[in-house]
Length: 144
Image (cartoon, rainbow, N blue to C red; front, side):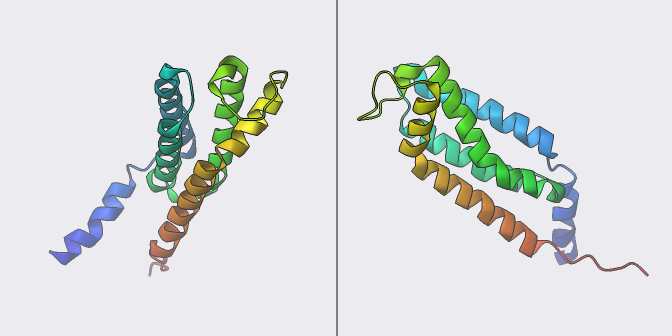
């Protein structure tokens, strides 16, 4: 019975996502989360929680050869979403002290700073998941 349990993770590993698949699915999920949160006209808690969940899930779902992508992806995804929101929904970023004349890059930078805590939490969870997976991965022994 216990040998069957040890074989199960190897069988499940064949269903892990490639780096490209994980990026596409994470971008699609963030588009949905952002669109749902923008329904009230502002980015808020739903965006923050959705971002953390999406980026913490990516390293758990990818193959071991895609850990680098999963590790550098959270900040890139965050800035890309902030850039898109700043460009197309500038009134959704309500940031105290931000002048109305701030351009897209100014709003992007301000939004990234304003929502920095979810970025830090999500990236830390993603890197932690990668570390756990690397440490739990069985050492490859040479075949005889």
